[in-house]
Length: 376
Image (cartoon, rainbow, N blue to C red; front, side, top):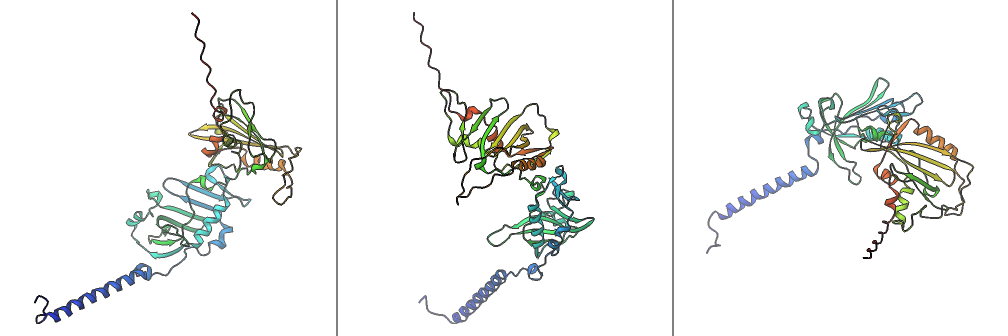
């Protein structure tokens, strides 16, 4: 019969089973090694922080330089102790971003040794920008002394949950590359380092907005007091109605949390053709923007005045208390000090609201009735 064992079959079967079992063990061992991180570069490498003392030295940093092949930024500390963006006309720098950079570099940890061959640097994004490479060079200085200098390359793993992510990196001047845990916050674009808070206006304070887009009619949006949710349009033409309350509120509230994307000297703007936006609060603050289109962006000259003689309506808060009116004269002075001499590239979503024409806020004009036919 076909299933009857022949002499030697049992021996051959035991050999096959033995080989299969050995292969299975080898596979399990290999899998265990991989799961346990049996990468030689990692298992033989002791994790290390390249800049463990940087946090303690943060108060001594005098200059930050970040360079890529497409952009670069230099942030310097002045004699007054304040940081400015040197290649953005010394406009004040975002101190929160500086703190994030120092913190991320302090916590960065080399967790795996990779290639030390210079001809492989660009493959992991660590070529120098001066050589046309795609690495980002970050340098922190204390006077003439370098506190930290590192080249950041390609992303190794994105952040996920409690994992901060990892990136290829190498110390500047060292060919040895690593995978580093942590993603330093180091954009090379100057605009990312500007302190972009200009004028944070609580929406409840806004009383009126007067807008005049270039080449268009001027119009004003108002509301009677802070308890009124929606603005109304003054002097609506006969037969027309607003598109919606939402359409009117957009340009009326466009000034809240006013921010910008870039700066330039005010004197470089041609103000022969401008749009204007003026915002007034119930408590006497007036913010004025003169907006100029240049190189595909909208640039604003910003001014402010404060009239402390105005008494704002008393609006109780959730707990029934009434907040004291702000010192609008000091508020306006702070805005003028911050904006004087500069023009600001305002975000397109803000500009589109400030530059909307009155026609766009209204329903279409009714069609004229047809002329009566002539009597023969």
